[in-house]
Image 1 (spheres, rainbow, N blue to C red):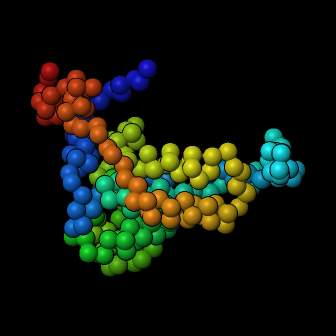
Image 2 (cartoon, rainbow, N blue to C red):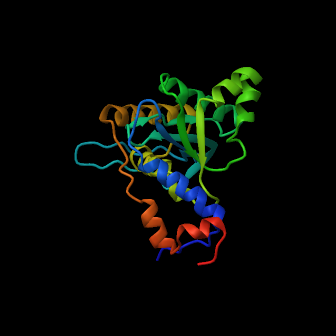
Length: 225
């Protein structure tokens, strides 16, 4: 059974801000983009497996060797069907800055780009100014309107759906031993998703939230209910 988390006025305010944003129709002038990171453990087989052949299934030995870790930025414009998911060495500030620049380049004519993401300490303007300098970093950050999800509310981020799709369809049970292979597989998956213009049909609304969490707008202004 799904457990409803304990919430306060700040949680509800942020939640409704994100839900109201996701309910708006898609526009080229104000696209909505969702971003999340997914750590990946790089694994290699301890012994060579047996490839598939006529009348014989492929076999993989159960033993594996750890080859370090990597990161995948799962980025999607859910109503447009634009996917910018890609693999990186880590999720540190320079990689986040690069991801935000990638988003900005994808929507060069946008008046503002709405970005839904969590409160990770790198998800801020400083990451961009540290990498691109004060002037360019600030200029780039001003292109975005950031909508932070409440703490412990990753379910509000459509990028979580992108994570699930990528994980099942790109990796599955395959072992990936190197960052280069992870990048190649992720790039190929991303290209397929973009060709299909795969959209995310987000259906959970503010009205649904008020029903599930059993509150009214008065709670958001500090009144009792």
